[in-house]
Amino acid sequence: MTEENKQATQQAQAVDKNHPANPAMPTAPDLTVSDLQALRTIIEVAQTRGAFKAAEMAVVGNTYNRLIQFLDAVKPAPEQQQAEGQPAPKAPTTDPVASAVAGVPTV
Image (cartoon, rainbow, N blue to C red):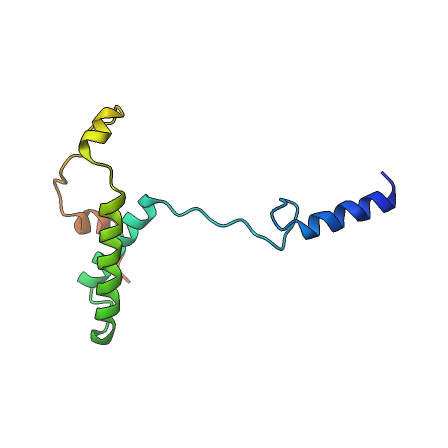
């Protein structure tokens, strides 16, 4: 490949922001429903430990409520899970906050 062709290829890649060789456009990390469920647990644990000031509680509470509404909306119905060959979700037998905190050192 000639030097002229190399330069033309590099210029085309610089223009194409979605090209994998372009370091200017990093790929976005994936965020899954499991990550959001973990955030719910983190907020619950932080609240039980008194991590939020009184002035912050409204913002935390509103965000938590929106997160719960979103998780409820994206959660598949039990009939749909069984139709897809997945077992129906079991009711938690332990407190989710207690199980999330188990083994986590306190600061």
